[in-house]
Length: 200
Image 1 (cartoon, rainbow, N blue to C red):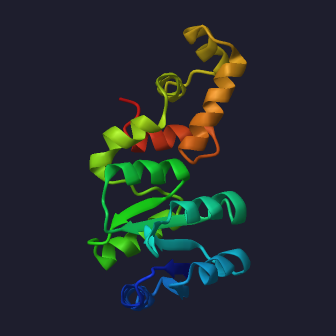
Image 2 (image 1 turned 135 degrees about the vertical axis):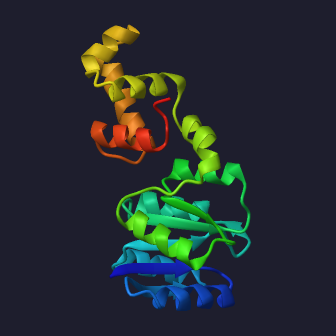
């Protein structure tokens, strides 16, 4: 069972999500909160696999809460944001912060359950129309160049010679690429780049 914790400051919305997810035979809703304090206590002291959060909480954007969780409480948390405000800027910011999925509030419960399953498996859920814009903006021009060379199986030393930079600089860029794509290795970076069409 995938252990899911939910926060939404609208009690009726929260109850609806909780009831629908609880009907799934693969999801266990282990916490549902309207209070940020109670939600953080759960995240800090209790076990969970996926955090489902509303972007707007008590009139404030949830990005500060996301940052607090990923930087100070549980850096490996898998977070899905749900928003009624569907702006590209929010998606870009969410991806930069390390969000695994960003869904419209108009999404179906089937889509939410699918996102939970995919994120639990280590995947990212990014809207198709954002792939060409958001993903490329995550990486600098030099990082994009290096990633393409990594995809073509260039070693760090070979990349350094190709781009006339030091091997140490290449290593730093590769580390930054992995961090931005939320992967832990060159292989993971290649896999994520192929999925996001960054190799084009």
